[in-house]
Length: 157
Image (cartoon, rainbow, N blue to C red):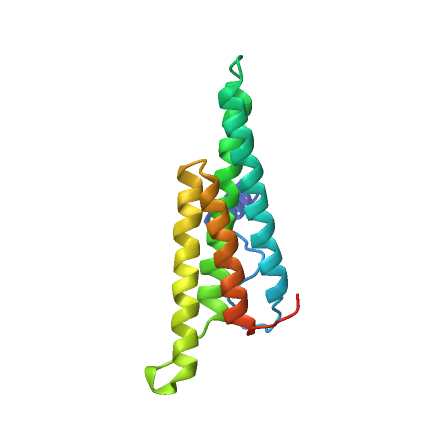
């Protein structure tokens, strides 16, 4: 009996102290699908746009539907956070490698990538804070600009 309780306590301690599991870790496994990440961000942007449209429509409705309104706000914020996660966890942490200024053009590319990624983080934050569709359009433009810098001009998707 005492051994059983000790085993249960040990298992519970292990479960409770375990960190979260992520879809793609920082282990250098070499398994990357950059195109998929761009597609995921684009899909999140479209979902944010739909959420914003629904928020505006529900806010104008003659009968208040607060439950649906809250659900669309939460949906918008969740997808904005997922953009932020992909930007910093996937691209900034794992894919965009630091380059020293002695590398000339490579350094310029690195700076452009970081600048675009930072702007994407900011506009994802703005998308969380508002229902302004201009933030969605800016996110789309930033994503396309980053795609062009990341892959090179003329990259076929």
